[in-house]
Length: 341
Image (cartoon, rainbow, N blue to C red):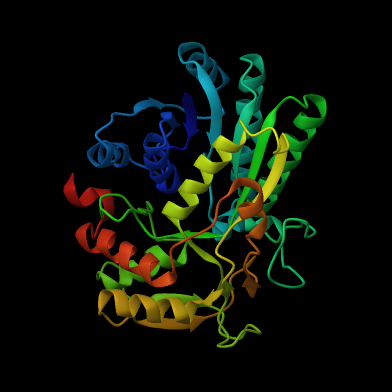
C-alpha cells in the first residue's frame, strides 16, 4: 500500500518511513525541504535497504498534489508537513496560519478530488492550551496559547467538519506530546536548520560544543524545581504509533474519526532532562535560567491509556534511552546531516 507522507524527510517523518517500510507499507515522500534534508531519506535506505520515492513539493501547491495522486495509487495520507516552533509562531503568526492551515486545506482538497479518504494528522498537545490538571485525557477542553497550537486546532476542526460531510472518511488525529531521541543506528535524528526551538537538540548542541549554553525559559513555574514539565516521547515510539493508526483503519471496531494522545504518561522537568543528558554524554551541560517564553505553560503530560485501548499502542522507551540515542546521533553528527556532506 502506498502511503503519501507529507513532510516525510523531516525528523518525525523520516523515522516514520522506517516503521512504515518495516510494516510492509510503501511511503511516498512529499516535502519542500524547508526544515529537512534528502540525506535523511538516503539514511533510511541505508537502514532498511529500501529506496523511498521522493517528490519535492509544497502542500500549498494543488497542481503538484494532484500530480502525485494521479501518479501513485495512494491508500492513505500521513500529514506531517508544517512549521512547528511555538516561539516563532508567536512572532510570525501569519506565516504559521498560511503554511499550516492553508497547506492542509489544499491537501485535503486534493484528497477529495482524487478520492483518497484516509488521513492521519500530526496534531499536538498544544491544542490543550494550559490544562487545569494533569494528566491530560483526550476529552479535555481545547484552547491554545500560541499560533502554532492554534493552527493545529483549526486543522483538527477542518477534519472534523470534513467527516460530518463525508462520514466515510477515515481520520486519525494524533496529539503528540514532546518527541525526542533518534534512531538507534545513530544515522538519523533531529537536525534543525538554525538555533533549535526544542529542548533536546539544544541540550545536545551544548554537549557537542556547537552551542555555548542552554537557555532555560523560566525557573519560577509551580513545578518541583521551577522549570517546565513535559511528557517526552521517543520518536521511534511515536513513529510506531502512526503504523498502528494506519492498521486501525482496517479495524471495523474503530470509529472512522478518532483522537488519541501519543505520550508516555510521565512528566519530566527541564533540569531532569539536563541531568539525564549529563549521564548519556558524560559531559556537563552549561545552562542559564532566563525569563519565561511567550506561549509556554508550566506542566503538560498525557494520559495515553486510550491509545492502548483503541489502537494497541503504548510507549516503551524511557528518558535515558531517549538521551542515549540522541547523543549517539549528535556525537556522530555534530553539525547534523551537514557533517557528512
